[in-house]
View 1 (tube, rainbow, N blue to C red):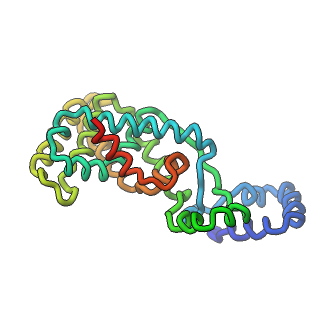
View 2 (view 1 turned 45 degrees about the vertical axis):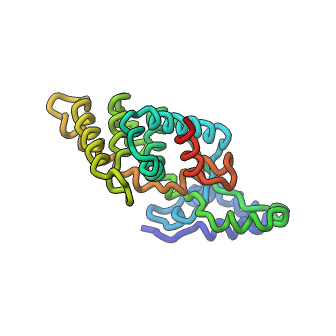
View 3 (view 1 turned 90 degrees about the horizontal axis):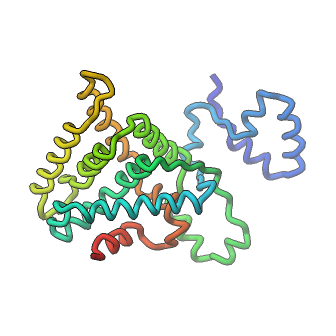
Length: 259
């Protein structure tokens, strides 16, 4: 099986427009080459790990993600048990749980999106942004591999077809995480997580008689995969176009504490 990466070859051909057009015409006559033209990569190609991408329709997808994030903060603010926690614990839990909660919200709302290759900055943009450019390079940009993990999570929850109650209690297990460092009320939070897990177990709707425990296990397994999606990917993909250099976590804290 051919495992050679052809991405560099494809990129090099783009450097000469005339030569690229000639080769493109030749590739159209050869079905074996057409896959390379359209960005096909062999299974396991490492290029996905470094191929930077961005949203195809950023205005639409960013608005949807922002609406989900706003609902997430309101959900947390309306939990009586969460409001009983010390403010510092609330902030710590929020910083840890907002990424998985956002993904659950995207799945619950049925949000879909497409990505495309991130265009290279023009020379004029590099000149005009000068100092800003260095900040952009320092931030980790979304990659095809990261987006694939996100889409895999969304697909798994879509196939599970959770009810509103199942989503609510699953979010509770994510919010009340006693493993977050330096919590003042860690034991109380651990008890809340156990209550949320028990409530989730009780409301899980088995697709077939006798499959109750199997479905509960699949939900927990899908939930564990949420940790594979980094906060940086979610921030850069959905929110950086809207908030600029602001920190998502700090904005969420302001929203949470604004009573």
